[in-house]
Image 1 (cartoon, rainbow, N blue to C red):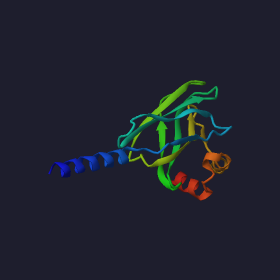
Image 2 (cartoon, rainbow, N blue to C red; image 1 turned 60 degrees about the vertical axis):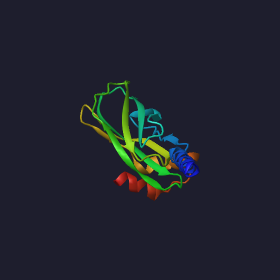
Image 3 (cartoon, rainbow, N blue to C red; image 1 turned 90 degrees about the vertical axis):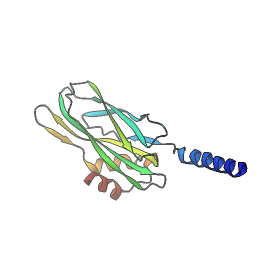
Image 4 (cartoon, helix red, strand yellow; image 1 turned 30 degrees about the vertical axis):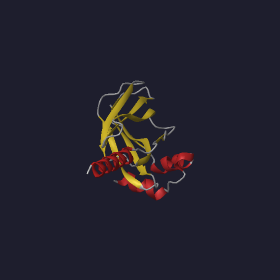
Length: 162
């Protein structure tokens, strides 16, 4: 009986260790030269090993104009370079000219994500003008990055349409 109990404990510990292992994640910021926002940092901030992953993006207003809303699109790929999905995070906090800001969010079930991509997809200035990323330019820029050599134009466009 003791041997069976010991075997069960060993198997449970081994299973927990295997399930707790996370992939080494690659975070890629696709910065467009004409984007009003520069992404300064993108990556995991806390929440190691749990079912939730808390991540953050730090950014800066590159212009001399105040911004009243911005959207950053994030796309996730698994260990096999297949789309895990994406999300568009929006901030409606006033971002003064040359000021920095931060977005923080949590995702459930993201432990299988291998590659995470972030880019500025839209900005609304306080005067009402809206700037939107040219998806084709984003794809061209991302395609030139070695970390994203697996991407196809179709995959990027499908996420942006969601």
